Image 1 (spheres, rainbow, N blue to C red):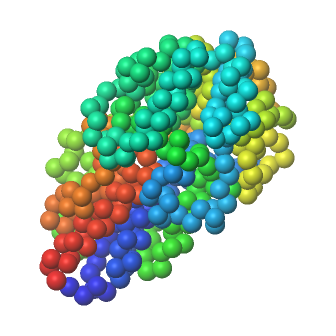
Image 2: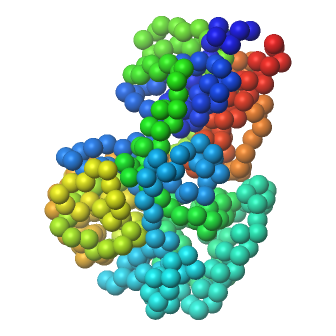
Length: 416
């Protein structure tokens, strides 16, 4: 089959779909991407609101992700680095805890923080050393338990679990109970140990924007939701049909494919709210963790502690909520402001925006690191991509996109 005449559709212009398109273009194909919204990015987007740069949810990139290193031009993204630590708010006090081996300025605050026992600090060093030796594939072959059970098995004190591990990893896993797989904990912990948490100067949305700039032969069709996908055709929400030789579904496939409708995918939800304030309570680029059990808010971050492409006149604060609630937007804003005052001593000025994120991260069991291209094949001509196939990370989104495209390429090679 001639490359130019081979018609390949990708459903979804998130990170997986963009990587699939890049992989296909490299081999001389010109795919078409159908996107239900007005722009690329999927869950990875940045808005400008009242002159402030707001990411859709508090997100960071871990620069040690192998797939990010492969596909992103870090220098062009002008990456801004977080300090490897956190400021913990607990019972009206705050303390800094961090990795002094990677940033010496965190040594004294960590030693005098009062968070965790001396034994805990020794166990952290031991965990660092152990995970440094493990391969990523090795981590995902381990027996699976919850993150909480895993931490308890390493004999960490309840104090350090509740005051550091729980709020820190709840903000990453977007669930408050550390029920997420121990494989995921080890993977993320290893990535933090091997590099830094970073944000592009123009916000997290700069990542898909850069990927799109690498595409030269891909056609984008926006505001075009897909209703269903079969071997024969794609049916759009307006009832029209589009015919393609191959399709890659780079989004949750269960609503689109008839025989997958029973395989419903569950998602963690979260809320991110943005406020302005006159001053920063946390001066350095550190995440703030709220370790009080009765608090609704989980973590905070002053985005203005980093260089930003677009800065408003005041300090910009994001607040993340991972606990379930049934509050209206107005009630949530009031509760968040109360929590900020009560637990962190923070008074905000202007409320900017609320992002209720219904599909923040897929809830997954038996997670994996990678898969074979052939494993992405659903039917004769339909392939799947998306982090839900592996684990909830940007690395997995990229890897699955690449593997789905390689799955198509393998079939084409055989047919030719």
